[in-house]
Length: 459
Image 1: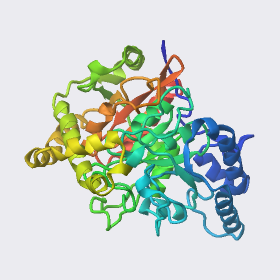
Image 2: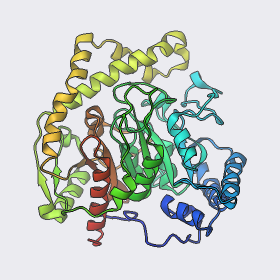
Image 3: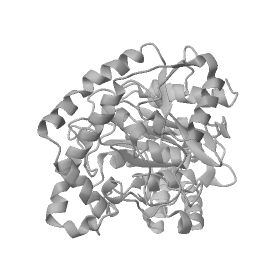
C-alpha cells in the first residue's frame, strides 16, 4: 500500500544543532553557525564521517578532497570569528554535479573525454554559492555527459534500485545525509526524477533563473540548473544563493530576483487548490503509483480538481525533438573526433538526433510559448499543477535510470517544478510533482510547503 509522509516538509523552530550535525537542514546549520552554536568545521567533519560510512555502497561522489573541504570550513570559521558579514549559506557544505565547473576541483562529466579536466574558474552558480559562504564539498556523480548511460551511484533507499539520472550523485548524497544541499542539472527529467526515486526535495526553477555559464551544455533551450535539499525552506535558501543575473548566459532573466525564502515561509492568502493532470503518459505509470495517487487525491478532497490539458501531448513530443536535435549539435563533435570515448548508447542517441529535420526542430522550438499559454491560463485559476514526478517507484536494477517522460514537457515549457517526497510503496519513494507559472517559483515553493504540512496534519 502507498502511504503519505511529510517528513522534512518544514523546518523546526529551533536552530540548535542536533546530536549529529550531518542531520541538520541547511537552514538550521547556517543559523547555528551564525549564532556560534556550531562551527563549519564540526559540520563538515560530520558530513565527511557520514560519507566515509556510506560512500562505499552508495558511490555518490566523483571527486572528494576531505582536506580541501575542511580547509574551506576552517576559513569560514576564521571569517566568522573576525566578525565579518556572513552569507546566507555561511559554512554550509554543498555537493556539485560533475558537469558544473569548479575552479579548484576537476570536472570530468563521467566521460573519458574530460578525464583530468581542470576548469580555470567556477561556474557562475558555484561562484554565487561561494559568495554566500558555502563550502563546496566535492563533485557528485553524473551519468555520462549528463545523458542516459548510468554512473556508479546506487539508490540509498534500496541499493538494488536505480537512483535515477542524470543528477544521481546529488540526489543520493542529500538523501542519505552526506550533505544538506546539492546542485544538479535538468534537460528532461534529470533533477526531478532522481529526487522522486531517492525521496528528497528538489526544485527545477524557472528557465533562466540560475545562470548556466560554466556548465556542460547539451541543449541551450532546455538546460536548467536544479537544486536538492531536505526541506522546502532549504530549497528556497539555496536558490536564493545561486540565482543571479548573468549577462554571459543569453537566457538569464534580467530582472530582480524575489526573496524566495521569505515567500516560501509565508502562509498562502487562501488554502491552495491544485489542478491534478495525469499527463499523456499516465497509462505508462505503474499500478502502485496509480494507487498512491488515488489515495492522495482522496486525502486532499476539495483541494484538488482533475483537469485534462490535451496540448501537453504536443509539449512532450516537442521536448523530445528539441533535446535530441540540440544534443546532437553540441555533442556531435565529440562523436566525430573521438568516437571510441563515447558509449554505444550515447552514440545511438546522437545519431538519432542528427536525423531530425530542421523544419521539425524549428517548429518544435517555436511552439513553446504558444503551448505555455494554456498552462499559464490554467494557473490563473489554480494554485499549482499536481502531477507524478515519475512513472512509479525507482525501477529495480542499475542498467538504466528510468524514463523522464513525466518531466520533459515541463522542462520544455520553462516552468518551475518541484518534487515533494510524500508517497511511498513497499518502502520505495514516489514523488509528487508540483508545477507553477514561469517566474512564480516563490509561490510554488509556498504551495509545496503547505501541501507537505497539510498531509502531516500541521495545517
